[in-house]
View 1 (cartoon, helix red, strand yellow):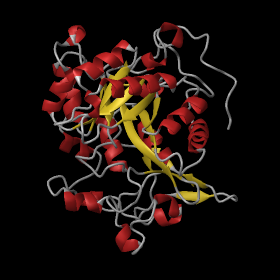
View 2: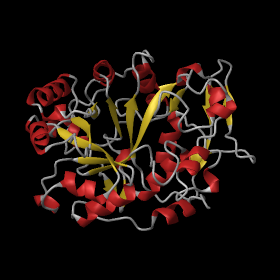
View 3: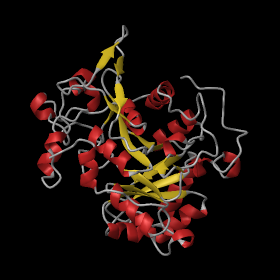
Length: 386
């Protein structure tokens, strides 16, 4: 792994470790676009991430896996069954793990049609044939690009003599100037040995590793000229995992110098109401060097009770809640007050409705501006017509 000798120690300024730690590399009241969106477009596709970028999310959230031939791919589940037509393209293999497919096979999958069937109210014909993405795609979208395609809609790529895929991108004519960061969730570390090192090296190769090469200025603002600018700051990436071994891997590879979040999930029985459980979560978050705890919202069983939030904040950590769908949920986890007087339970929201969350934060006077067009108008401007 190409770990550079240049470190962030010795930096000064608002967003430097000396001024409060890498936790401060992320903006307050962060809007994190969960899988791009799972509401307005097929999750984790080019359509979802272009929509999340243009809507004004601070971060695009993704889940990274690895194909049989070592290509880093973006998918939430352990199989392709739920979100693609794998049962039609590869009958009998729909329950097989992602890691059993080569990327050449993965390129044949349609990751958009299943969304249309399940969500007729949001269905668009232009979602048909959306690809399963590779890791680089999301970062290029965050930069204002889109996938370069042939006349028939297939993506343009080459393979070098070693068989490594090389992808092509082009300026997105519908890009509106927002530059979000990327929120990376690592899946199944036992199944993907050394995936953390592989992602580290890929971030270096594509120019997104904040620990390698040209390090962003400490005072680079999160909003610039009225546009999201997080993707050009030292907080341009966050790494996270549900796995304790995975979190320790992230500590080893990223050396506690990029923001990280320990993800936890509230089970069916409300163990989070037990003090020893929340104590152990906070203790491990500190052990693995995390700055954030990511926990799920709940109805009967609450993943972020006021007592748990107080404990997280007392430990010098922050809480991000997943995954927001309604204004009522935002109100519950934001809490009382507005502007500088706000005392929210959650410091950031991982949201399926980026548009609603941005406008909610704007209404509470903690975000300078709201959205400028409807979700449908944004999709139309991006070329996703009915």
